[in-house]
Length: 117
Image (cartoon, rainbow, N blue to C red; front, top):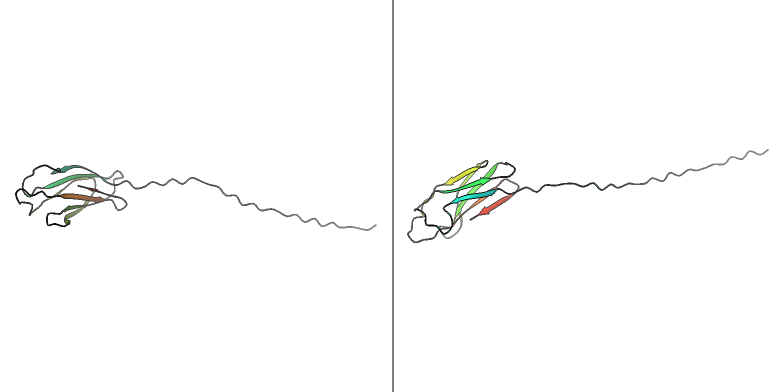
């Protein structure tokens, strides 16, 4: 009797499975400005002390810039760092009677920023 050997080749089919997993990212929330003084359109004393409350929703470290265009172009009066609190900036040269001065505050936590006038 003849011996027959049957060679059986098994092929394994390798399947690649792709799983789609949701990735949740959170965008940084900008700091919130509130309680500005002096407020827009109000008469203030000459060389008012500007104040504003700054609150970062995530409690991050903040950099706060006070700016004015009293000279005709926007200039930084002062820059402060800290956490959530009330910031203040003394002014000078805002003392011409009948002149309307504009000021703003830019606050950043390094990831997001906000600007208030």
